[in-house]
Image 1 (spheres, rainbow, N blue to C red):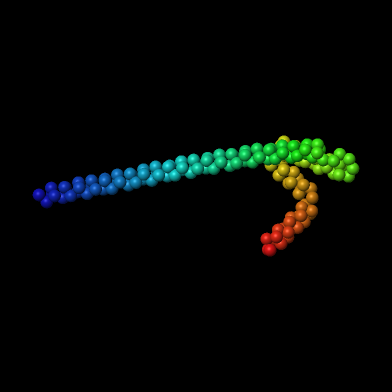
Image 2: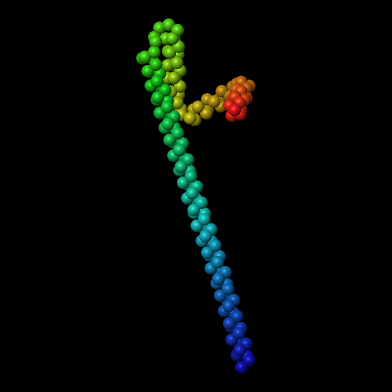
Length: 146
């Protein structure tokens, strides 16, 4: 009888051990599934952020193009309604030419063209660029300190 009881206890503890192993496997599977779900969610969020950034960049380029068109339109208005002779005529003509060329530049090259032009200018003239930056910093500090 003692032998039968021992065999019964042994087989019972074996099934507990097997049950613990099954629980560990289930926990590992659940952790793996949770990890995959987190990866999928992060990937989806990354894609949505990328899409939003692309949309904003596209809208900024559209707005820049619209501003360029407005500048060209303003140049035409200045030409039509501004004085045509004398010093004021020369001044209005120069303003209209500058607005038109700037508007064309904005429409054709957008924000990336402005950034490239600014970078090239700073590279060609580094000392004046630094001095302008310092001057703007001083002016900004004075305005903000009041």
